[in-house]
Length: 259
Image (cartoon, rainbow, N blue to C red; front, top):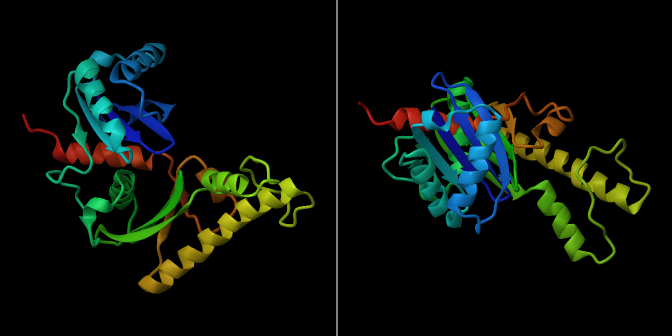
């Protein structure tokens, strides 16, 4: 069995894959750079016991993190509690199976690399991955598996927090789909602006990427808020919530030590 760790700015997702590539279980924790390997280990051990996962069967691990301060403790977790030395996305020695056609490939976030790898393996032709995280990101992958670049935009919760912090009379509000565009209260207007503004951004940027590239894309949405937007706009073709994890699994399989 394999342990995959996707450490984002807001949450860390831990998933255990069976040997056939299916996900046995996954768990989510808030990102906290002060959490030690032992804290992660005890928390994971309890969850694995609850869900019937035998941790002694985990013999490999891989980590993707966009929070460098978490890497040491996550690597220590794998070594101490699962007796394996994890692969780490960003290691130049890794064979990703795709080409990263960026000015500086090392700048690309580990999660975006995993999304691109999984999207190329899972869907045919050119793919545009739309990931709803702390930032809303667009990743362009051509039909040959080349990562061509993308767009980074402030995520919904980040936008809401900035609005609340920057305007004294505007409260914090939850992300949800309003019934109508025209808000008849301050909170209603905020919810409408954030949600429908994001929809307009998605549709506009997707159209511009397609026009600039001279091709159509299969648009894949992932991230926690992906289902909410999938049902709202026709731009999104598929909702694939496990895309990042499957990319991690695929990269490890491609680079696993040969016995």
